[in-house]
Image 1 (cartoon, rainbow, N blue to C red):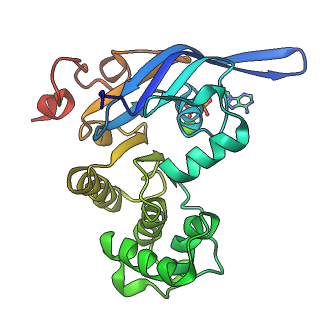
Image 2 (cartoon, helix red, strand yellow):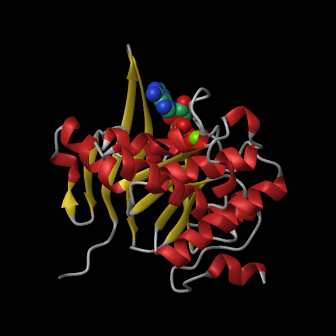
Image 3 (cartoon, protein in one colour):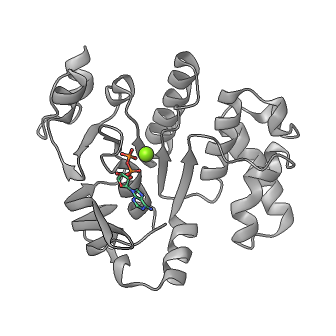
Length: 251
Ligand SMILES: Nc1ncnc2c1ncn2[C@@H]1O[C@H](COP(=O)(O)OP(=O)(O)O)[C@@H](O)[C@H]1O
Ligand SMILES: [Mg+2]
């Protein structure tokens, strides 16, 4: 089979309109993400990071441009077809965990399988395995209120993994965590990337996190900004030739 990038966005724009006003949140953005890559989307607040993540996650549609996911032109699909692709291929992690407070860790993790109509017994087994994979095998019956922030985010990551998505999308996953816990969560993402080959896209404005990614996609005012690390964060510039320039610069 021919090689297919995981994500190929071609000249994507996203305009928000409210009454007479319109705002161009993304302006002619083209991005390719390869299978097995771990990349960050970085840029100042309001630069369009979450908007870009929402489009990659098929949670919203661009105003113009095309999107190929695993080689399939998903921009021409109906919203229902897009939702099916999303449920099959993508896993999401959010800053504030988005766990349901009345459900145990295991029941939270099972949710994507409920939507995917997986039978109950398989759901229980797969959700336990996913929790074990993130180091929470001993907490499967805990309610979210009895877990630390880092543990809650691990549950959310297990939930993102449980239906075996090809790509995980995380918007500021360490934003609500202290530095050390954030570093542990980043370590977990890297492990999932290396050991399970997951493609991972992380929105962050933390340069510490950017340093540990394969590549950084920089945004400023809705446009690609290759030099964003240097200009905005004062760390070294991403160089497309070096497979791991950010870490190399940090060493
Ligand atoms: N639903 C929306 N309606 C109108 N404007 C929006 C909407 N979502 C985002 N924006 C605007 O688009 C810009 C980019 O937002 P966002 O992608 O959330 O930025 P970031 O995640 O980089 O902080 C901001 O100026 C924001 O106000
Ligand atoms: Mg955001």
